Length: 392
Image 1: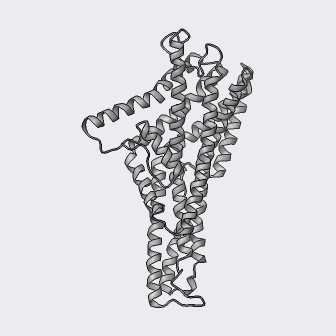
Image 2: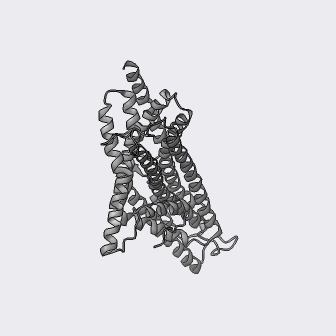
């Protein structure tokens, strides 16, 4: 079984490969014993990465209830794991729809053979790769910092366990479990977010290439200085235009599928991110014992902010590219077309009036304005939490 999942977008290929390695993107053609083994592996992997953490940290949260400092210490990773679990379940349940979207965009982008189109594809690839490496770097600093900054005979993350976690060999085994599980959870979380942002980025790429096709609609079909298309030239241009209209509709349909597939997990992520950014900032204020721990918490704060920014940035750029389709139509030599062809040109222009948007739960549109609103809301909750801590 090949581990590497091939895709025109490198970050998406890496994300799917990691998910496949951990069982969340396993081949769907397995039957009988192989299918049972894969399902058992998925069940084990899910509980190892998410289930155990959610249970132990939830109990820990109730045990320290009332102490703001200890509650925030137990809660900031708990809610991250809860949302991670929701995102994993969403992909497992809607695997067929997600795979169809990915395969469709990949097939379209692989078929692009123009130099300008390849340049657009490579530019999107470079952008998403740079953002992914920034995400991975901050995540690595966070989990490594947590692993090496723990005080003597203290676990990196506070959680309840049904045994004395400070005695050997229970302490060493629990320590090793936390380090391994957190590293793998971080890899899966980055992969899940990359899956969504890369799907949006590929739609952006397809819209850019569509704009290129519309701008060059009459390329090699009209001569310099010619003001009116001949009947043969018009047939060529009409054929190209129909393909562009069909591709435009396919892109908009993919955007709708992304919305329907990931809207609820995005809403959960945004809601929890407000709380996590607030809680992590609160932890930073009172972290004075360890410089390594301070760096790790600062990196975690930046990771959570970058996580929200990636969704909002890609959603914002998608909306911008969808409006640029109309501009692309206008830059083609429409004046040389017949009245019938000009009416066809109105189709993509009219459809571009309604901007392609992706929302979180149908409430918040993915945009840079939404990102700033989330940061402001987090700061507001942080000040409230700080006042509550001062009173206690």
